[in-house]
Length: 211
Image 1 (cartoon, rainbow, N blue to C red):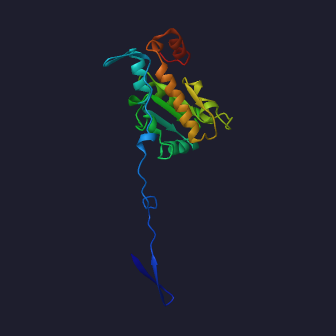
Image 2 (image 1 turned 120 degrees about the horizontal axis):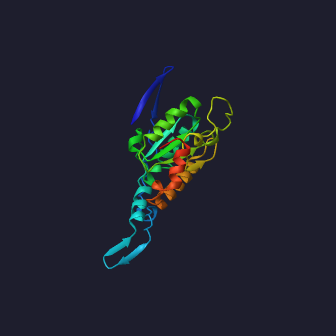
Image 3 (image 1 turned 30 degrees about the vertical axis):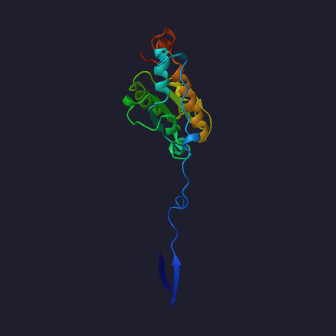
């Protein structure tokens, strides 16, 4: 509706613009061609039943229902915020539920510079996560220390905890974070139940001083 603005002895009628410009011309959602379904695991299909390996069914559920724990300390955390927002929408991959308690999460996403004083805290957060757990190092600082080659910065979080996927960049774009998350999904979907109890995994944990 028109409003009157006065100034300098004159009266001008003007129209206020709509604060939200995206709802002027509504477009119906194309749900037929924009929704993708996950592929079925390998198995045998019969008349009214489907048989597959139990590990494949659990892997399919796990990879599409990850609960990330964002451990962000600097600019890579801002890129992660963009990744979670509506344009890139990490929730499309079943990871819209962020957790800030390690006991309820299975993916630790370390983003940003990790000082050596912060190393024990990060390791404690990792130890409080229940198995199975995965770790993604997002950005150059978390992967290798980045440009901060100094006495106070940890030169890669893999010096204190094992890392499953590294995402390069300073900072990485949201597309890179999404690609790293999909690599995590591949690992989760293909992991065997016996891996966590195997000798190779136990030796890996012992090399980090984790029992």
